[in-house]
Length: 278
Image (cartoon, rainbow, N blue to C red; front, side, top):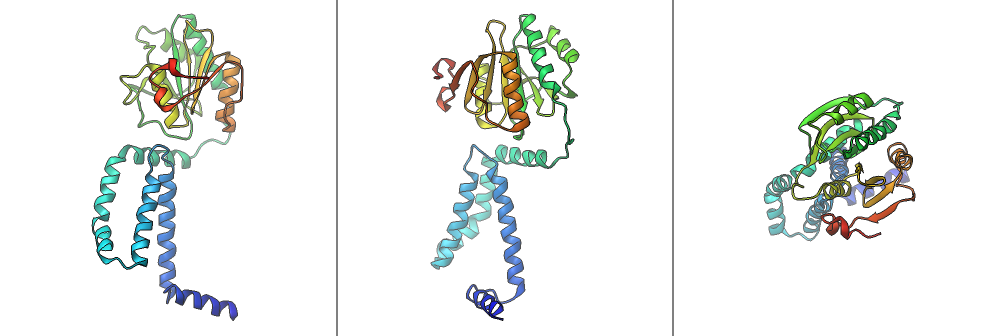
């Protein structure tokens, strides 16, 4: 009885006079929570902070009874939401695709032999005196960030990749687009909005914005180049690269400290590789 009486006192104090009020609060709280989780997925824009700021403004003006400001926010709220959606259209779409990827069914056991096959394909490209660039998609969806003139949906296959590399139309300034399940999504891929950047600068920007993995092999360089988040590792062997990729894809870990030249990528240094510092 004391618990029930205490609950009634709290409900009366909060202005909750019947069960319908409680149900409405639960529904709207759940909705706000889901929206917050969705907006939190964007790493580049302050969508979540802006959303919270708007909610706190509504609470503040309600507590202090500011009718003019309240009318303004409620009246122009839909317009501001629409403008925000227009300004952040790409980010919101990317978040939606990421959620779809997260809840899409996947096989419980996935063979990761494709990683070794991918490295062998890169070595084959170097034997043909050609560069090889590969983008590996993890949790963050990349469809809206990458232009792929040739779309595919086939597992990584050494014979197929070798044929593509040996083709006269093979473009060394573009990349292969692979998922973490070892599915080739596209070839001759470029990063949107990076036409004035060098290839390595464009890949660095992509790695900074998402959790994508990028590795490159240039026939004039001694080893592989691996890019993840704000890290760039150069002159690593094929065995070391396989280890790094598996750590990211299988265990979702940060790269271990391995031999090779390590660099930290700064936002204002992606246009000039020479400005990177160890």
